[in-house]
Image (cartoon, rainbow, N blue to C red; front, side):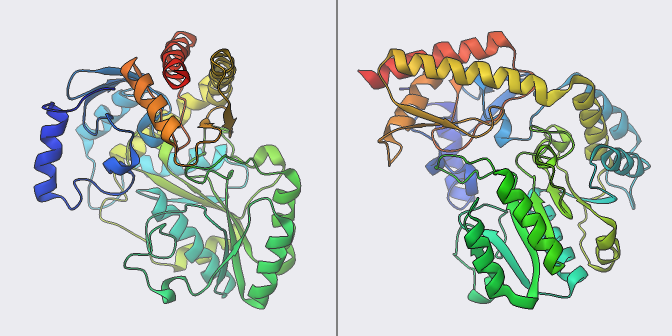
Length: 407
């Protein structure tokens, strides 16, 4: 177990407690990390991360998803530098806005237009607002337990949230057609949208890929009722398929929300949509002082261009398969039962008979001690910077972790 006593990290935590409620907020709070995990980092490069105490790790969280080409990718950083020398937060956008919008519309088959924000919550909230404006209706179907952002209509915490904030939300179960139909019946003629994650990636649970029947059923329901099908691709976008995560299912949404990997760590999100919702997208008011940041958009143009050149999903899939097979072999060697779910580019590893994640937390703490940064509850993320040698280093660390749990 790595000790943080008298470390630079612990000193920063102590200082933060005095000036930041809880020390840190949301998913970055220490409560979401195994014991011994650092909160503060000094630098990162490629798929390697170094904390403020000088410990280096192979990074399998990728900043919780935004890093897709690798930390400090040279092409992205060059584009950022060039744009920052011209201007970033100006009185209006730079020409890079149009270039980026053209690139996104060209990449995403269902996109007739796009608009931009700063984070995933901006994007999902804009999708819901556009759907309501475009249909003149109120009810929105969401999967129970799904995460779509951190504002009252969708926050996982009910602190400070009123019943009125969620008065028009109805719930269904992921991949359950009957529950979708039941929720649709409750919505009646007031159904504005069905919001669905690219796959079921609920925190702390086994992950679940959408079945073709489920995806096509949602499309059929929306077509029959005139509601908008919204795919929340904030977490999975560009890792599974550059065209959109449901393109491989043959289902195209009316609206999609994107963020995380779109600009390789620079703050940006996007909404893509079909022509029948174009007017609604012009009528809603969604904005922010920093939403036209030219630097973030330059980072996105460089990121998306490079992802295309590399066929990034194929590389991450190959590395993910190597990781999944290696973890299965090493767990079996130590007589341990694990469950690996989700797309291999976004792996989730859970121990069986581990309802409180005690094994998982101890395993991850031990792998951290051997140089690999994993997570015991949340899905992880691969990047284009991960090589076979990096995956093998993770597997060596995992072997030590499995050995520790077996003992």
